[in-house]
Image (cartoon, rainbow, N blue to C red; front, side, top):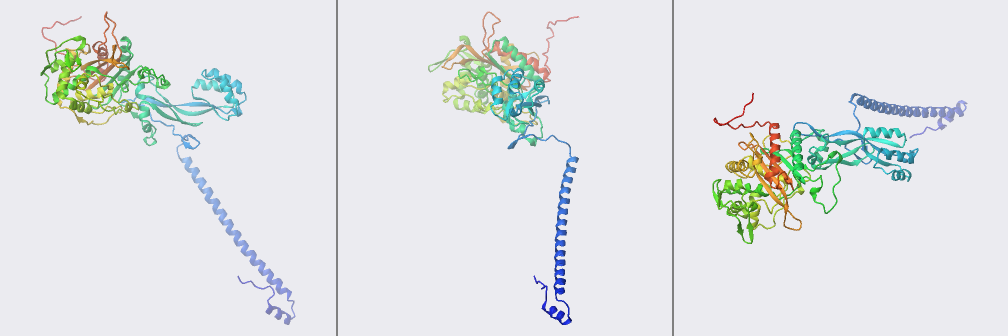
Length: 597
């Protein structure tokens, strides 16, 4: 930058020639220089003020726009969070197929303390123990006085308990809002729902997670924000579930059974309309698992006998042998087979119940009606081990059931490691191979629906269901006709429900000992039924663990005297609820009828 000198030589010389004072020239130039400096400074100051004003306008404009946007939106409760990660507290409801609530959320409060601001830690500990008897006042006092800044006291409070804590009046006691899971029907459908607990927890919120049953199996779906809180609709019907649990409990009590299970399934879709296991529990107050290693799994009320219970299902398996033999063209319903008992196979002797002999020959239909072990054994030998295994595998007996319960994958059927002909014989009448009542329900559904294997589900299905055909419609029709004879003429005569054409098969299986062999006085009884037989729509499985009928002078332990009457009462109660109209039998012209005025 060029700088003008304060005393230019040319002007100084000129001033001297004119007789002027040269110092005035310096003062004049100095004045001009100062004025230029002031002009530049004023320009910079004005520019800075302009920038500052623009910044204020932009900042206040953004704040005003944000405030306007917030004022225009609908008020929402902010989502609670804990340090480090967001806690998603909202969990979708669970409903039955008709929209009735099985599980929902309620708002409650947790109780915690800030000991450093407490006025009377000792007195507060004593008063809290009076409200919550499970708390130890001495231990609580130690936690209040050992230097901690935060203490959890209770994760869930009732309104009454919250009011009592309020009345203590200590400023160090604080409440945190949170959601918890509520099962409004108590014990009803407990083994289906399973239960829930708290996951990640913060002062103002807690994550609700499933711990068992469908709550855990469908946990991701129930917690998915993308679902928008849409309820999870199950296939079960609350009315049917309640009725079945009521009848099953009465039957278990009357027959002195250790436990019981029942499954009602739609044979066409695989939808489970009711699933019960006894003894049961309340998912609102889920008990702790039994840790005693000597105890049996079934001793715990948490054990789901319908899904986790893997039993030898006895003579209910006989219909699979006859159905496969008919499908292969080896026999027909009226084909005569060897039924001469006892049957000797190597060093093994195959006997009939109570040493009976239904032989020397029986039709295939009579083999099922009379529940002949020997007749079934001869039919199974015609099929052979490899074909028998393939057929049972197609019915789902070699894998866990795919039902939406977290316990289902662990309920794997017990399959013999080797499959010689003696295993073919024993498996044909339900011994030596163990499966769950749900496996049996799915297999009987394939017979009832015309020969298509379907997957059982606890979720309501929309639209038609497809599956793999495992037998022809004729084989399935003939099999149902044989099962109908079991009720009208055979071992399940107590299972007949007038108007509803019940068909089914009994199964009485001795319970195996842990040390090997079988008990003489302990059985697992099952009745597998389909109805109505003329147009099969539903499958009902009833299983009783160690039942016995002591109403007569002789103790009776067979399925015909235990599981069958219970199943009969269930069908009598639930069939009208499902809209099934009874099929009235025609009355003979010369029949005697009762009349009243």
